[in-house]
Image (cartoon, rainbow, N blue to C red; front, side):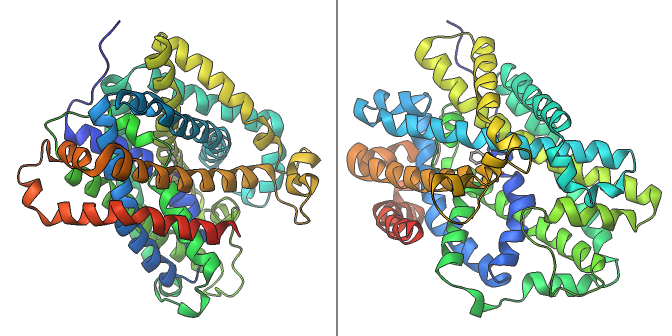
Length: 452
Ligand code: PHE
C-alpha cells in the first residue's frame, strides 16, 4: 500500500485547516447571523465561544488525529477503544450531510460568478428563478463537486495543500480589495456602525445558541475534519500554535467579511438599515444591485471578484468535507484513493438532490418540515443544516469527553507536548486541562437548551 500522505510543513497544514474553516459559514452565514443576533453583541459572544469552548475541541481533534494517523472512525480503534468508533462514524455521516447541501450553495456562488462576469446584474432580482432553474444549478453543483473531487484525488500535499496555498492568499487579497473600496461608498459608516455597535437587548437564548452553532460550524469542529487533517500533520510541529492560528484566521476572515459587506448593504439602501433584507438571500439578492450601481466595468470586476472569492472559500471547505469519508474508505477498506473519491462524490451529490430541488422547485422539499409534521414551513436544506449543527455540537462534546475521561488527559497532554517544548510547565497546559474537563458539561447544557 502507498504511504499515507502528509502536509509538507506547518504552514501547509494551517492553510489547509484554515481553508476548511473559512467558507460559506464566514462570508455568507456569519454576517446575517450577526444581523439577526444584535450586531456586535453577537460578535462578542461568538469570540468567547471560539476561544473558550471551541479552541480546546480543536486541539483535541488535531491531537487524536496526529497520534493515530487515522480517519475519525479508525482513530478511536487505534487508541484501543473500538466501541468509540461509532462516534467517528457519526462524524463521517455529519460530513456527508453537510457536504450534500453545502455543495448546492457553493454551486450557486459559482453560478453567480459566471452571471456577474457576463454583466447580468438583474440576477439579484431573479434569485428565485435562478435557484429553481434545475438544469443550470445542477450543472453548477456537478462542476463544483467535480472540482472538489479533482483536488482531493491529488492527495494531501499535491492536492489539498497546494490548492489551499493558492486559494487562501487570493481570498485574503480579494476581501481586502473589496473592503477598502466599500469604505469609500456613500453611507458606508452607517453600515459599519450597524455591524459594530452592540445591541445587548437583542441577546437571548436563541442568539446564544446561534453563536455557539455558528462557532462550531465555522471552525469545522465536531465531525472529525480536524482529526483527519491532524492525521497528516507532522509530529515535530506545535499543535497549540497551529490551532490558535487556525482559530484567529477563521474569526478574522468572518469579521472582515462583515466589515466588507455591511457598507455595501447600507450603500444599497441609502443608509436605511431598518428593513434590510437579511437572511439566507442577503448576498445573492442585495449584492448584484450594489455592483450594478458601480457602473458596468467596476460592477463586473468587483461583482465577479466577490463571487469568485465566495467560491474559493467554499472550495477549500468542500475539499475538507470530502476528504473525511474518503480517508475512511482508504484507511479501512484499503481502497484506491481515486476510486474512493469517485464513489463518495457521487453518493454525496445524490444525497444533495433534495436540497438542490428544495428551494421552490419541489413542493415537498421546499416545505419539508410541514410534511414531517411541524407547522412552520422549512426547506430541506435548512432542516439538514439544523440537524448537522446539533450533530456537530454533540460530536464535539463527546470527543472532548472521550479525550478527558476515556483516553485520559495525560495521553492528550503527552501528544500536545510533542513539538511544543515547555508545554508541561506552561499556562496553556492548565488552560487545556481545565477546559477539556469542563467544556463538555457546559456544551451539553447549552445543547440541551438549544434543543428545547
Ligand atoms: N467551516 C466551514 C464553513 O464555515 C464549513 C465546514 C463545516 C467545513 C464542517 C468542514 C466541516 O463554511
